[in-house]
Length: 147
Image (cartoon, rainbow, N blue to C red; front, side, top):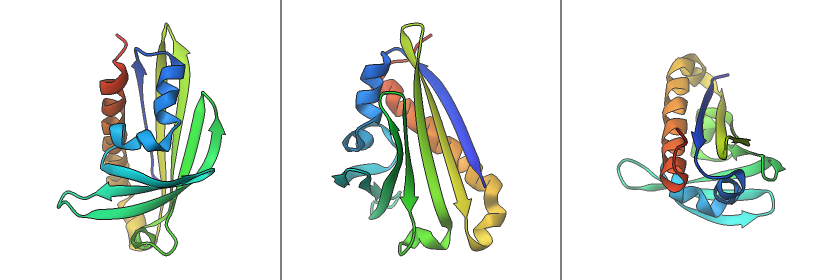
């Protein structure tokens, strides 16, 4: 199961970073390819993603864990979607902890592949790392980098 991990220390305090990562409506501000977020309810939300060609695709997520202000995790719901051919599931976890007046942000993306895509795990891991790096770049643009 390909898993990608990345971290960065931001200049802002944990509470400020949590206000961004703990609210799905803020995802378009920092998560790659998210054009908007819809249908946020307790425990679920939908991302509207913009492809490189400019079209949109919807992706549904359910909340797996919420420990304010230190940890949030969600799983992409793939059943009955175009993602079903490739993924059994994709779990994203964000952990925050205070560090020297700033916040260490740990991101983890774990993808369980389906069918022939199982044999491309190394490519999926590389793509996952790029997504996480872009997400951290987005958070850094909002909250600054420490050191």
